[in-house]
Length: 635
Image (cartoon, rainbow, N blue to C red; front, top):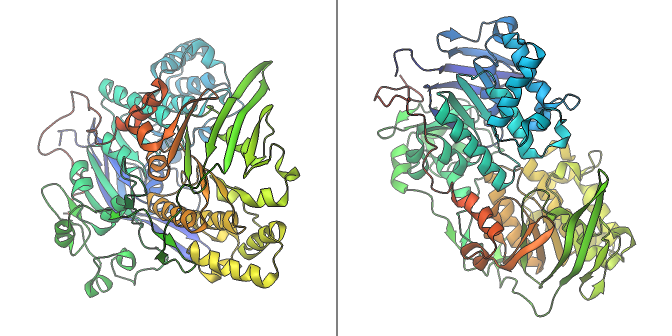
C-alpha cells in the first residue's frame, strides 16, 4: 500500500432496500480497496448487488435504498455522512461513473458537446468558449472524428458506441482519481466493444485513476482487471488475483459461473453447457446463502454462515469446503455426442435433427432501401442464401450492417423493395398479415427483449393459448395437452401459467417467448439476440433449451447475435453482413477458423484479442510493492 493509502476503501458496507415486503438486504458487509492505477472487477448474476455497490459508492442510491452499516472512504474522506452539497464537490471532480446505457445518461434535448462543457463550467467556472475548447479536446481524446462538428450534434445522431464515448468523455472531463464502470460495453458490437476497451487501456496508460469495473462478462473482466471480487446476493464469496480466481476457483458459485460460459471455439455438437441450478429457494437464516444451489453442500452449510477464508496465496473464499472445491479443479463442460434430443418431459432420447435434403428457406436477391435525411440508405443489398431443414444459420455483423432488416423481411415485418422469400417451396414475399395461416405457423420469431413482446395485462396461459387459437385449428383439449408438454420442455412450472409477465424473471420471460414461438410446431424460428440481455447462468440454460427444442421439433433457426462465441456454439453455417451486403457465407467451422473476407477477420480478431489476454497494461507509475491494498482484508 502506498503511504497515502488506497484511493477507495469500502469497509463492511451494508445496503438495504425498503419494499412492500419489508427491508431487503442488497449489500451484506462488503469490504474492498483499490489503489491508484489499479483495476478491480466485480462479477455476478443480476441481483447480486454489483450495480447497487457502485451506486452506493457514488451515493446515488434510489429513495428506497439506504446504507445501514460500514463506511466508504475516498482517500481520507468517509462519503457516507456527507451532505449532497458536500458530495457534489467530489462527484465528477474526483469520482466519476460510466453507466451501462449511454442513452439514459445523455439529455436528448442538449447537444453532446454542451453536456461535456457543462462539467467544466460547473466545476472550474470556465466561460462558454473555454468550456467548448476543453469539451472538444475530450471528444478528440475518446476518438470521435471531427470533434468540432460532433460537439454540435444531438445524442440521437450518434451510434451506440459513439454515445458511450461521449459518456466516457464526460466522466473523464475532470481527470477523476476513481472511475466506476458499470457494464460499459453491454449491448455494443464486438468491434465497438474492442474499441472502447482499447480506449480504457490507453487512458490507463495516461492516468493513474483507480478503476472499479462491474460486468457479468467474465472474459472481459479477465482482460481488464488485476483483481476480482465475485458477488452473490450482496456478499463477496470469492476474491483474489483475476487469473487465480478464474483458473483455480475455490468457491462453488465462481465455479458454477465459469461452467456456464460458452467455451471459445466450441460447438453444440461437442459440448453441453452446465447452467447453475435455480436460485428461487432461499437459504435458512444463518446458513450459507448459496447452499440451495450448491453442488458441494453439506449439513453444516444449512446451520452456519461461512466467513471469507484464506484459500491460497492471494484468494479468499466464503466456503467451508473451499479446499474440496479447489481439488475438484476448474469446471469441465459435459461432452455431447451431438445427437441428443428431448422428449416432452425433458429427457434426452433419440437422434437429433440432421440436415435434410433440399432447402427449407430460399432468399433470392432481397433488397431494402430506406430514405433518410434526403438520401437513400441501402439497408440490404441483393441478399441471397439457402437454409436446409434442421440447420442453424448464424447472421453476424456490426449494428447497421442489415442483419435485423434482413430478418424482418424474411418474417414479413418489412416489405422488400426487390427479391423473393421462399419458405417450403411457397413464395411468402409479402407482409406477415397477408401470408397464409400455414406460412405464419411455419415461421416464428423470438426477440431480444421478451418483456416488450408479452402482453403485460395477460396471464401466461392467455398469451400461449391465444397464439394456438390464432394459428392452430385444433380443439381446446389438444391445446391443453400441447401447453402442458411445452411447459415441461421449457422448464416452467404449472403455476407460472397463472402469472403475468412482470411477475417472472428475465430468463422466465424468455422461456415463455420461446414456448409461444414453438407452440404451433414451426419449421423456422428467427432468434434476434435471444440471450444478449441475460446473465451467463440464464444464457446457458436458454442455449441448452434452444438446442433441445430444435432437435425435438426438427426446426431450423436463423440466429442473429453480436456474441460470436454464442453464434459459433449454436450455428452450423455463418453469414457475415457488412454495410447491407453478405461478405462471407459458409460452414461455421470454416468461417471461424479460416475467414476469407477482411471484414470477417476484423470481427474475429476483436474477440480473440481478449480471449486469454492478460489484464490491460497499468500505468508505469503504479506501485508494485507487496503491501499494496488487496480485496478484501478478512481481518
